[in-house]
Image 1: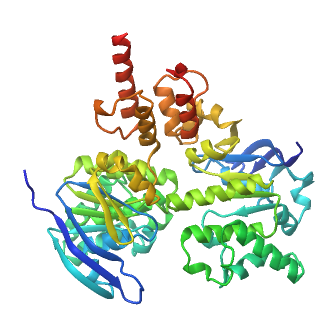
Image 2 (image 1 turned 90 degrees about the horizontal axis):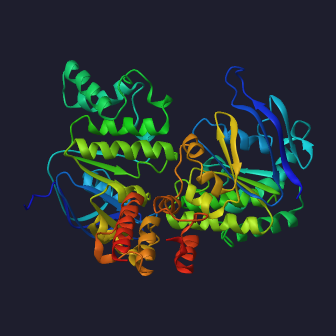
Image 3 (image 1 turned 120 degrees about the vertical axis):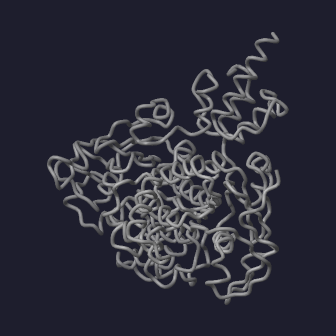
Length: 273
Length: 280
C-alpha cells in the first residue's frame, strides 16, 4: 500500500533545549486506522497537526501524497487531510447546520450544485440527514461533534484526524460517534484518532503510535502495546479491563482485547483455562 | 442503626420556565451521612437539575414551578462541570477567600482555612497562583477546595470530569476517593464514567427523563444490566465478563457478590480455579 503521510526525522519546537517533537519518522498508509496515544505534553497533538500542515517541521520533512507540506498551501492540505478538534465548538460558527457544513466546500470554490450534494451526503453520513436548517448551538454535544465531522467530510478528505472524538459524550453518543468513524474507515478514509481511551483503541484501531516526550516510542498493533507495561505507563494509560483480566487469570495464547473476542475464546473451547 | 438523612427530596417536581417538559418528576431521594452516591443517566436526563435541587439552588435561584419538599442539614458545597464558570478571583487565595469573607471570618481564620483546604485537595502552596494557569485537573481541584472552605456536610459534584482529559479525570476521582476515606462527608457525583463510579460509590441512582429509575447499592445497581442497557448506560466490561464467565459455568453466581473491579474478578476466578483443582 502506498503511504499517504510520511514523516522523515521531524523535529519541532521553539526551544532547542526542549523540542516538542524530536526526530519522529513514520509512514501512514492509505486506508489505515491509526490511534495515537501518549500522556499530556507527549507531543501527540503536535504530531497530528503536522499531518495536515497546521504545523510545519523545524527540521525534517512531512510529505502528504509525496508532496512536502512546506510547499503546499493550507487549502490544498485541508482537502487531503482534515483535522477535527476535540471541542466541536472550536470549529462551529454558523447559524445553521447546512451553512456550517458548506463552509469548507464554498472555500474550495465548488459550484453550488456540487456543494449542495456534498453537504447532503456529509449530513447523511453522520446521521443528520434533513437537519440542515437546524441551529448547531442548540443541539447536544454528540450532535455538535457530528456536525464538526460532517463539515470536514463535505470536503471529501482522504485522511481524517480526530482529536479525542468521544470526550464529553455519553455512552450512546460515544458508540454513535465511533460507529460513524468505523463507517468512514470502511468507505476508504484513512483514520488517525488521538485518544486516551484504550477500550476504543482495542475495539477500533489496527495500529497504535505511542508518543512520549516528543518521541515515537512504540509503533505496533494494539496487542503489542497492551503487552508492554512500560510503554503503557509512559502513555499514562492502562490496558483495557478485558485484557487485564486475561493477564490476571493467566490465560494462554494471544489475550483477547475486547469482550467479543473474550466471548469467542471462552465459548470456543476450554483450552484457555 | 437507622440514621436521619442528611439531605432529602420528597416527591419533587420541577418545571423550568419556558421548557415544554418537566425536568424532574416525582423525585424522592434520601442521602445519609458519609454516603457516596453516583448519579448516572443519558444526556439531558436531569442530572444537573437533580444536583441543583439537592443543593437547594432549585427553586431558590431558578425560574420555574416547584412542588414537593426538600430537607437539609448543614451546608452543601457544589462543584460544576466546567470549573472556569465558577472562578471569580485572580489568585487561588482570592478564589477561596470569597465565601469565607462573606461569612465574616477573620483574616487569620481565612488564611488558616485556605491552607487546610489546599492541603486537602493536594495543592499545598498554590495560594498565590492564578486559577487560570492550572491544568484542567488542578482547576477542578481548586473548585472542589472552594466548595469545601465552609466545611460542608455534603459535596455535590455535577459531571466534574467531563470537561477534563483522562489524566485530569483520574486526579479528580483519586481526590474524591481520598475525601471519602478521610472525611465523613456525604458525596454525590454525577458522571458518565461508570467504571470509576463502580469502584468508589456506595450507591447509584439512574435518572432518565427526570425520573429516578434505579436507586440501589452499587452491586445491586450493576446487576440490573438490562435496565442499564435500555437507558444506554455503559456497563463496565468487568461486569459483562463476570456474567459471561457465569453463563459459561466458569464462575458460580452463588459464590459471592458481583465483582466491580478487574482485581475482584480475578480473585473470584482464582478461587474457582483452586476449588476446581482441589476437586479433581
